[in-house]
Length: 437
Ligand SMILES: *Cc1c(COP(=O)(O)O)cnc(C)c1O
Image (cartoon, rainbow, N blue to C red; front, top):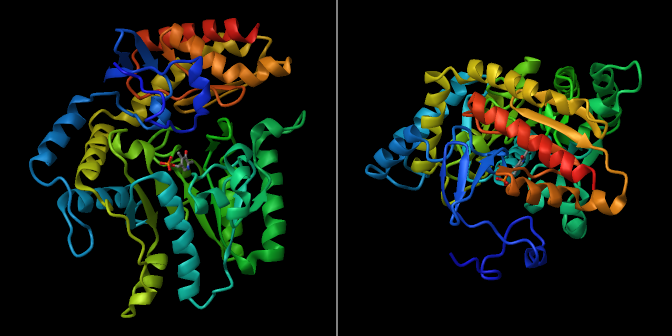
């Protein structure tokens, strides 16, 4: 197969790197495996950028899509509705006990974040509080790469080049559990970080529309984990200072952290919850924002301009919604959250020997996310660590894509015992090879 080097401009890539590292041309996928045109296979240990939940070419999702294709592939969602979008909205609302009973649709994660930001701002304005125009995000936060989403993203590599174009948010302390001083717990770090947020809200709460948080794991920051008590504290502060809470569950939702929504582990609901990535099983672009009655009612009026006039051409695409429905059905039919408890514990045990490696720091796990940091002292070796691990992983049939020096596994929820053993053994061997260079 031709691997054209310049007609396709690849995402998140310095294209010149492909002068020395060829692209992998994929022919097909099956279960947790991807197969290239040369007959080589790769275990998809990162769920193809965190989207795939039930394996590639999943029989049940495929069948649902074939059925949907024969009924309705797409129609506009203004003035029209269809069964898949209604069912999906109702099933998701039910999963929040109807605390978040209204779903607004888009196609990608960044757009869901934009929608939550706009809805928060506009609902305050409709309520006569048009001074609430500012947003708060956490250190290291990642919420997508469109202009609005970059404004609440604190990753220098993605953000700095566009600084002059952005309306930047307030950045507050991260509750990163790794910051615990000797004798401190993750809950202590969380309380300290919540204290920093409170100081900001005390000073500027009247101008702040919303705080955006990625619950439990700041994934793109390098699988940075925090104590659930942080989310409870933020919920309380948001209530006290009349500020919305936006939970970006684009990566951590859909069972990834052990519960269907990560927020459930803190027993809170946000004012806005963003979902994307896994919601369609990794099949089709779909994102959505769930919100409360209070927000919905703030727009409900005879006046057009008080409505939420945001739209995307493919809003509520029937095929994507149908893939999502098939995904939710698998959660129920296969008792996935319970099955994953066992799978996560097997994965943790299989990788446990690495925790004792002298160059491994902060071995950590939350549900189906496992991560550790590599201690690499030579700066040149450290800078190339992620790319070397990726290349060495492919040599040993595993797709790993470290973030900086953080190695992580975020596999689809289909790995069997043999695949878990293989993944653990290959990850360890690739790590030992590359960390000692
Ligand atoms: C991936 C991601 C996004 C952006 O989603 P896209 O579909 O890539 O635009 C936003 N927030 C979080 C937490 C993500 O992981």
